[in-house]
Length: 212
Ligand code: ADP
Ligand code: AMP
Image 1 (cartoon, protein in one colour):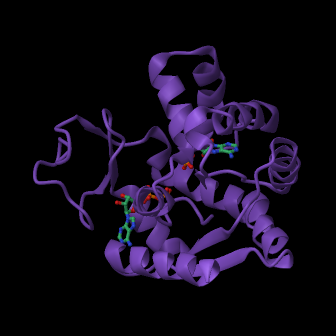
Image 2 (cartoon, rainbow, N blue to C red; image 1 turned 90 degrees about the vertical axis):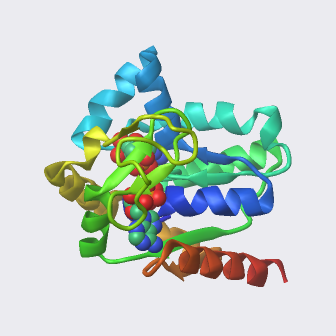
């Protein structure tokens, strides 16, 4: 969890690799559907471009399908889901139904100004999905991915007005689930300021504390 731009996608990549489990990002799945021109993508795009949440029924059905895939048998890391209390409640019911359990909820804590700086410079690889930043984590060639040479793009929802709206949506709809999980003693807050590798170190230390 964490506001848009907190570094969820960036950290999820490292944590999933560390745990050898898939990262399941609802935002990535929606964007893939948009680029492939599927009906799900067309439906999601309307909401994503406005910085609003895609309706719960669409999102929940998609997550249920994804976590039922074979690569999710040994566990998975959810990035960007749940995003409101209704989704959190459905997730609890869905996990119980399929015999999975939620081990931990990590919140990346960072202030709004830093979030705006991070989102304004975000670039994403069209081919491999790697996340870059033009100042904080720049690729050698500003137009191409260092990892796979794919073309980099700026997300449509990373325009300043949309960023502000997404922050409002986070504060109004998503932030309440911080309390939802804190009340269930599942929440671990991680300071998400400073260099990416320092945040990864803190996140992995938090996982180790939870395991012991
Ligand atoms: P989220 O998934 O939470 O929206 P991202 O992981 O996409 O956030 O990160 C948003 C932007 O901030 C990206 O451009 C990323 O490269 C950059 N970023 C991530 N973590 C840090 C950090 N610790 N310091 C500076 N920039 C960061
Ligand atoms: P993200 O990549 O996590 O920043 O998500 C990008 C956009 O996808 C969001 O602004 C929403 O429009 C949509 N989205 C991603 N995850 C969800 C979710 N769990 N519920 C509703 N909409 C979502």
